[in-house]
Image (cartoon, rainbow, N blue to C red; front, side):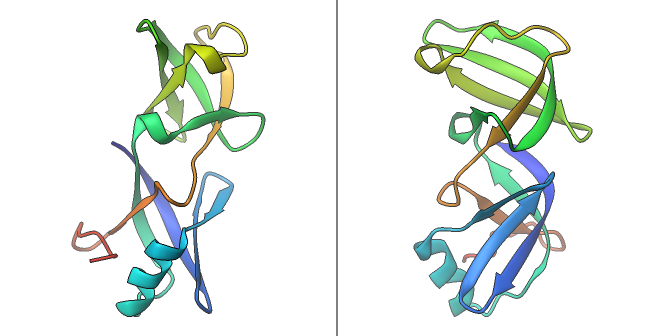
Length: 126
């Protein structure tokens, strides 16, 4: 899992995560669990699995350090804000080749974001 220093933001019943200039709303199930525990806005550790990231035209900026062809996908090892991150790109979705030093942007949806307490490392949903 990729981990990021991020912010959990609460706006009424809505929850968002913000990291590297990217913001996404959490899905309804996650919002309901966070609200049930009365979780407030706070700094968090955000977890996103490599297969749940998407290369995009905008989003979190990163520099390619390694691009590994793995058959049906390319595993991009990138540096995003000083963090090592892995992005899995299905070869069917590729828009070109990735080279050392290329800048890419990636995103993820609110359904796949995992929010952990910075203090206890526990998932804030449970």
